[in-house]
Every structure is written in structure tokens, then in C-alpha cells.
Length: 382
Image 1 (spheres, one colour):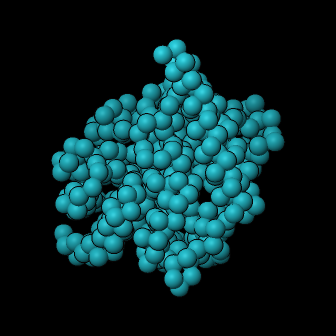
Image 2 (cartoon, helix red, strand yellow):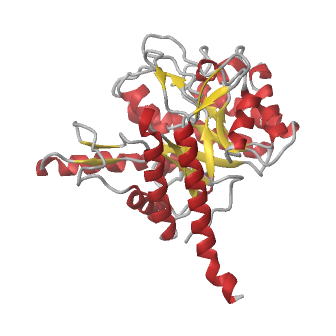
């Protein structure tokens, strides 16, 4: 049985921090939409009370660098200081789909500016003190390349340029890693990418479905220098692999989502084992969650599969509830009830989703018991 050892807590909380522009040009800011920007100290405290001492959170580049090369940290410093004061370990997203309006994201300037911003952010974090920084430089390169570069679902509104955009994001990500490590070699790096399964509706589509499934690995392979080495990827670029997994991450090619009751549904544990066999790196479930009444049962399923994978010595270092707060939907601002906590009141207090909280406590105890059981023989022998 694999025993986690990297993070302050095995179970983590992720704050939705997307800042992209939608297809209609409206910029989102989910830290404002959830009022996490106002109540960050209380949010970290409330998560800590439920054993979530490690979190994913994000910087808002477009607010910090409103003028080229000039950084206003007023939107970030309260978050950083709240983390340090509460003892919360944060994996900081540096680019969660958003960037300053004056930059042409397709140009070399994007890579250069992002590297400079990453370096400045790392220096600020080091100057403020605290433990070794953790960063996720670019969130979901594969999904962003598809949604923003291939399908024109949000900015930069590319159409059939997904591969080009993926390469550009990989260039920027590599430059960001080099930049933060130049400030502090202790910096640790996570990249979060979707884990997917795609099947064919007919035998004639099997090859196409398999190619679509294997496409989930292309960003990883670029980052690690296994393909297109001219981009600058290398094996030591990634310390931990983040895998984002939701109930709609398995589907029929050009068709519907595969439900868990379907015989074609692939167990998550098998997917994790395949990814480990391919990359042999520590992993976390960097995003997972469900909406409404499905929240608790979904967490139970995911932890079942994670324990199964860990029993096969797959190195899973954590599971991140994401988003850990209810949030307004990207498209229509509807109230998405996904969180361990709901919207904040004027004092920053949030309603706890009791069923999910109870399930979380159950799963925390189960993981602890599993790990204790795995250690018992050697303890007895000693």
C-alpha cells in the first residue's frame, strides 16, 4: 500500500479561480464571484477545521500586471498572508485561463511576460517567508487548448488551432517553471490535466476513439520532453502530476457521457494505474467533485478507486475537492452547488454542506485506517 508523504493533508480544497473571457468577451473572476477574495482568511480557517490544510488557489494576473512590467500585488498579498498566518499550504495557480488584455497570447511576448510575472510572484512569496512554494503554472493545458484554441468556446477564440495553442501554452509553462526555480530552487511544480476515457460507438470508430483518448497525454509528453523536444520539455520539469476527474470525463466518441452503471465505464483506479505506468511520478486528484445531492456519493466513489490504486502502489498523494465553494456558473451565473461550503454572508460565514462534510470525515478516517493497516505488519515485526 502506497503511503502519502508530500502534502500537509491528503484531502485538499480547491478554490475556483478562473479569470478568462467568455465567448461574448465578458471576463470572469470567480474569486470575486465566490467572495473568496474578501473572506480568504476565514475560508482557510474553515477548511482547516475540516482537515483541509492543503489547498489550490490562484493569482489573478490580469489584476496584478495592468501595465507591462508593473506589478500591483494588492489583490494577492491578503491571500498570501492569510495562508502564512493560518499555516495553510497553497498550490498557487499562476495562469488559470486568464491573462492581461494588452498581450497577444499567440506571440513570443506572451511567453516572455508570463515568465517575468512568474519570477516576480515567486520572489514575493519568498520575501514574505513561509515554506517552499508550490505552483501550478498553467492550468489544464489540454482543455484550454481545446476550448480556447480548437472550439472557440472562450478566449483566445481560436478555431482549429488547438495544437498550435497547446504548444504555445507549453512554451509558457516551461518558461514559468524555469523562472520560479531561478528565484527559489525549492519551488515544487504541479501541472493539472484532465484524465479521460473515450470509447467508440461502433467497431469502425475504435481507432479514432483510441486516438482521442491518447490525446490526453500530449501536453504531459511535451512538458516532459518526450515529444517535440524543441519546446524545451524535460523529465524534471514536473514534480507531481495533477489529474482532474469528474463524472463526465468518460464519453462515447462524438456521443454521450458514459455513466458509472454502463459496462463500458472504466474504473478510475485502472486509469490511475495506466498513467503511473506511463510516467512513474507522484500524482494527486487535483480536481474532483459533483453537484447537488451527488456530492457525497461521488467522493466515496473516488476515494474507493484511489485506495484501490494505492493498494497497487500507485503513488496518489492527495484528493482535492473542487470547487470547495459553491460558485456562479461560467455561462449564466447560476448557483452551482458543488462545495463543501456555500456562498458567504456579510461576515464571511458560509453554510456547511453537512452530508458532504460527514462523508469527508468518513473518507479521512478510512484513508487513515487503510494506511495504519498497511503499516501494522512492520510495526508488529519490530
